[in-house]
Image 1 (tube, one colour):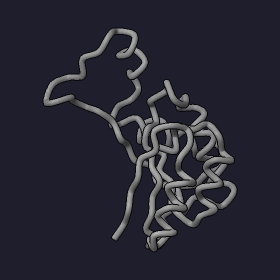
Image 2 (cartoon, helix red, strand yellow):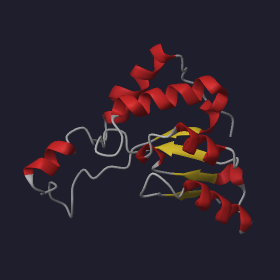
Image 3 (cartoon, helix red, strand yellow):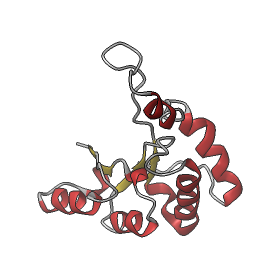
Length: 139
């Protein structure tokens, strides 16, 4: 059974992978999410060294990591051979309790790019000139 996790800070992914593997989970079926909360490629590589997948799934939530930094990091990891271990997805709040998200104006302004279409519109096209390729990995 696949396991998908969330990490809230720019840390915790290595520990999650280690715990799940120690408990018998197959690393090939583990995806550590929210790695886009961290700007640190060494952190991403440390998680990948455990044999698990990572998910850049908060692209556009620039209060954690600017989109350009995520794009640069994804492209670098792809160039270094990790493309088949990276998932691009999107964990976003489109509506809150069936209504548009209500928050103070400065918060809404900070979330303007945190939309369901951000990964497709910004990250994939921006990564291509930086040396990454769109590839499909075998299951």
